[in-house]
Image 1 (cartoon, helix red, strand yellow):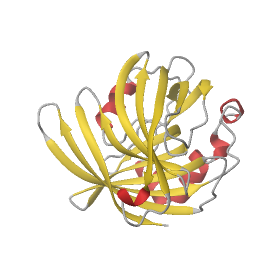
Image 2: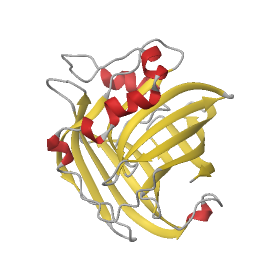
Image 3: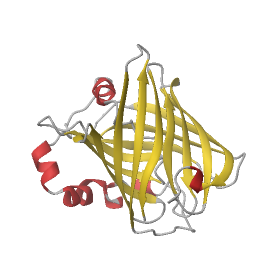
Image 4: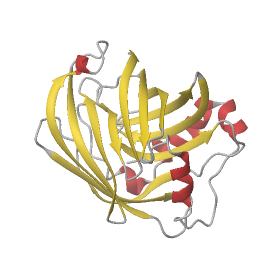
Length: 252
C-alpha cells in the first residue's frame, strides 16, 4: 500500500531510510504543467517492471469504468490534540486488470496545497506514487513496489482475508528498501449508499494492518465499491494521529 499523502512530513522521514543512487525528484512546475502527460509517462501500467506486473492477480471481472471523480472530506486529530480538516479530490482512471491511475488534489481552506500521482491496484495497493507540494519547487521522490513475495487477490465476500508482501523504495534505487506487509480482512457487505447517496451497488468493508520492516505502521479501514472495483479509505490510525474520511461527492 502507498504512503498517505496527508502526511508529507512522513514521506520526508521515510526517504531518509531509503538508499538511492539516483534521485527521482522532479520540478513542481514541470509536473503541474502537463498533468495528463506526467501521469501517462510515470504512472501508466507500462511504467511497471515485467517482474511486478506478472505478480498482480488477473482481474477477469474488470468493470472498465473509464474515469470517475470522487471527493472525500478528511478529519484529522494528532496525538497532541491538534485537529485539522481538508478535502481530497480524486480523479480515477481504469487502465485495466484492476490497475487504476489516481490523481489526488488536496485542498485546505479552498486552497490546493498538494497533488499525489499514483498507479494502484484497485485503489488499495499502491504500485507507484509521488507527492507534489504545490508551495514548493521540487516533488518528493517517486516511490514504487520493487519486489513482491506475495500478492493475494482481493475477495468480494465477507470474512475473507488477503495479504500483500513486498519491498518498496525509490524509483531507480540500487539497494535497500522497506519490507512491507498489508494484511486485510473483509468484515461486511452493505449498500454503498451508506457512504454517499450517489454511490451505486454494494460495498465490501475491510479492516487492514500495515507493517514496515515487521513493525506495525497503521491500522485502517477501506471500502471496496463492487460496481467499480476500487477501494476508498475511510479510516487510518497511526501512533501519532487518527484520520477519518467521508465521501461528500461522486461523479460517475
